[in-house]
Image 1: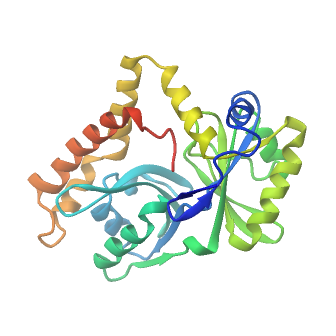
Image 2 (image 1 turned 120 degrees about the vertical axis):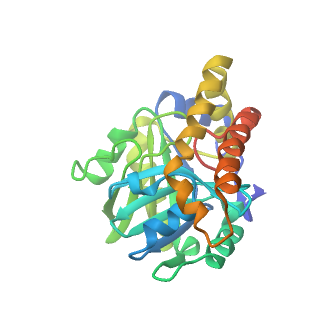
Length: 282
C-alpha cells in the first residue's frame, strides 16, 4: 500500500505483471474511488461550465461526456477532467483525487447565480472494469437492458437497490467501463464484479498495473502516432466556442489571455506528458 492523492492504495494484488496480462487478455478491475465527483445543476449550468472549462459542453446531449480542462484566470491548467451531461441542466465532473480541494475551491469562488455545485466525492465509490471481455461482464452483471454505453456515453443502472452511473471513457487503452455508486454499495459491487468476472479470470488490479498498461499502450504506437494522439487530445479538450464565455468572466479572462493561452498550454502540456501521459484518468 502507498499514499496516493490522500488515499492508501494498493500497488499490486496478485502481482503487477499478472494483473497486466489479465487486462490485456481478458479482464481486470481497478478501485478508482479516490477520484472526485462534483455535481453541477441549474438553468445557467451550461453557460457557467463553458466559462470555466475549455471544451464546449453545449455539444453534449444528455448521456454524453467529454474530456476537458479547468483553467485559472491566466489560462494555466488547474486540472484535467471528464464532464458528463446527465440531464439537460445537470452534470457530473469527475476530477483527479489530488485536485479535489483545489478544484472545488476554484469553482466555488467563481460560481454564478442559478448554478448549484455539490462535492459528493465522499459519498461515491467507483470501479473501472478493463479488458476485452468487459461488455460480456456488463451483460452478465446487469442484463442487456440497458446495454453497456457507447464510447464517451453515460447511463444509469440499478444494483442492489441503488442507482449507479456507468460510463465508457477509458482507463488503460483497453475496452471497459466505469461504475459510480453510493459509497456504501461499493464493497458489494466490488465483490459482485469479481464473482461475476471469475468465468473470465478477472483480476483485481493496483497502481502498478495501471502504469504498466498505459506505458505499454504508448510503446505500441510510433513516435509520430503518439504526437498525433497528443494533438488530438489537446484538440478534444479545447474548443473555440468557449472563447467568448472566457472573455465574459467579468474581467477575469481576456480573449488574448485565457483562451489563447489555454490552446497553447493544453497542446504543450499534453505533448510534454509523453513520459507521464495517462491513457484515461488518475
